[in-house]
Length: 352
Image (cartoon, rainbow, N blue to C red; front, side, top):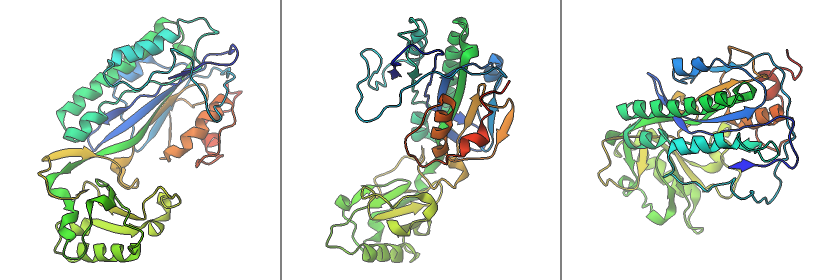
């Protein structure tokens, strides 16, 4: 996807979004990457010397050059992407072709060059769901994504524009292994309450149930928790069911009508299913409580607004939106991030 400026920008911008899974000894994490086209310098070999495996700590890199931020028009309401710039997702497109598509934008005349681009890789998240985060296939997939990032950086360097790119790589979730011995089956609650399949909107790491309007939500929750705490349901003590308004406030998961009235949370690595259908021996999942370390991911940035070599404390991904709008110098839409976060992360505009 790419956005064309309404007038020729003074400086070009690239924002690229990648999905990958970093492989570390403790866990794996899935990640996106954004690249902003401004002025920056980074040691190209830094990326190839080690995998991008920042989890608990976040690392940023930059040069001391000043950015010249472009004029970018925020999207409000409906918007139609110009022809040949916004492709629908197609998982069959080779990763190399995706990278080359982005690089080819930099060969366009300046008044045709997009100022906002997004590039997406769905691996190794895909493999992680099938085999779990610790399988050798994950290592192989991570190496391939690392090669794609190298391809992108090499292409920018060959065009003599890499020094003008601010790069942000950021993940959206982690990954944890799940095995057949860690399942909880709703059928096992039949002695306390029947949960018809049509009530259930989702299973897995998060259970969501919307009973008919004539059924008491509180009663359903009470009966389910009674069975789970009885000691007679396999792994029942690993699942707790809530009315959505009773969920921990830090989850911010109760204020929408789209959220079903009953939510179940499981302990790390456990999963919920309707019934035992012969689940695979081991696989992988995400969507657990974000307080679990395994759900953390990476943030790696370099550019003129990032202090070189700085490590910052863990933060929530909702903060990244305001970070981006601050770098771009635009007023963002209302969001759940804090307005002051960018100031704690970024160097001043006039930094030399």
